[in-house]
Image 1 (cartoon, helix red, strand yellow):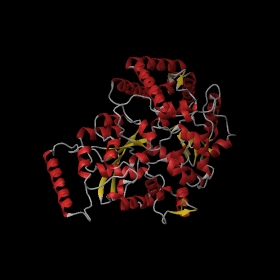
Image 2 (tube, rainbow, N blue to C red):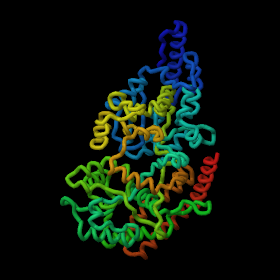
Image 3 (cartoon, helix red, strand yellow):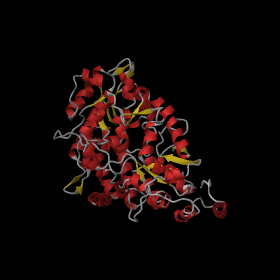
Image 4 (cartoon, rainbow, N blue to C red):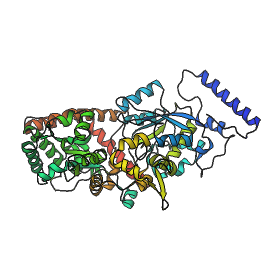
Length: 555
């Protein structure tokens, strides 16, 4: 911990040196143990003689000396580093905090679990709120309680983190170990109209319209459009068109996502509903089986690598996609500016249930996307919590999202506004925008949409169409159902893991089944197996979790 000694008496300086010397000796005596050698309480006692904390003022300003922090971002696709872009340089210059970003080479859960075993964790950790490793970090005492760190080092944290978020993530022991990004409450969504819904059913505009904008909401219309594609539009630029793509493959695109398009309920009469066995969902799985049998779809959407998906997307080689519109924000403008300007994607009504009801798409929710934690391996817990407080504040949100005033944005009529050249890059060269300037959504780990969305420029029409469509079909109150499944190492979590893994194996078998009788046999065998694995216990867990969430929302 680096503490400024300017203007302090020699007595205090000597006392600080003595404290640091004692801490170093303590660390040396515990060199085989990678966990912090002092508790937050003891470190607080060291800090108290030096500063007086004000709950109404951010504490990061008390110490802006250089400090290095490692930040694990649990997404192996995250491409950005810290220190080269203008925004990251500006934040480091202001706060003194230099960040080294680490990403997993493979599965984030496996990577962080190995780190837990070794006892060596990055200073800051951001993981998907649904990841099993998150619970392991909390329950294994690998991360600090943020409320305790805030009490001791930066009580201003409570002002910017938000009581609703802290309460939502509060554990039974009263502590909160993570703060989410992209967290939305139902009340906020109702008030603002910002739903954060990003699930859409997309089609390539030119092909869809040339076909006469066929009805894709029924199994018959869906199969008819695929047949027309095969007969008349099989190739594009000398390459075969892939008829269909489902984001996240079996566990997401072909399960939860498809069920949301079909407006499959999450509960009935207060009881958690078994969505897998919903008749409309089963009907549509059989529709995909028929499409495969007729040669209208292939299995590439179940086996394509990320690079293959990216290549096909960038070259408009998919016809229909079950895909989040946010994943197309960079591609659509590029396609619209290509030699075939109508080859971009638009959101339309996709598969619907037998009642013809509109989709019920996931909105934002209190869980958010990723949760950020401070590990007990850090040597600088006080700087880490102050840095998170800064990033969560409106000032920190503005610095990372907009960059430096005068260089990337100006104050116009009392409101921050991106410079025109930055807006142009956002529309036409987002890669350069992120690499050179690091603004907008480059560093999203602590992103608070309530703050930053007021600064977003108007989206290009080819993006806004998808966003508006998703917002119009968002089921605002359904966020409470996201993440009901058990995580961690408990018996019920292991049972759910076995069921989920088996479903990933079974669904491709269902699609490739030789006939409907074979489909039914495979499906029923899966239902029997999941009972043996412990499905009844999973449903009990989901019910208890839902009841607990409803109680929290009612507080």
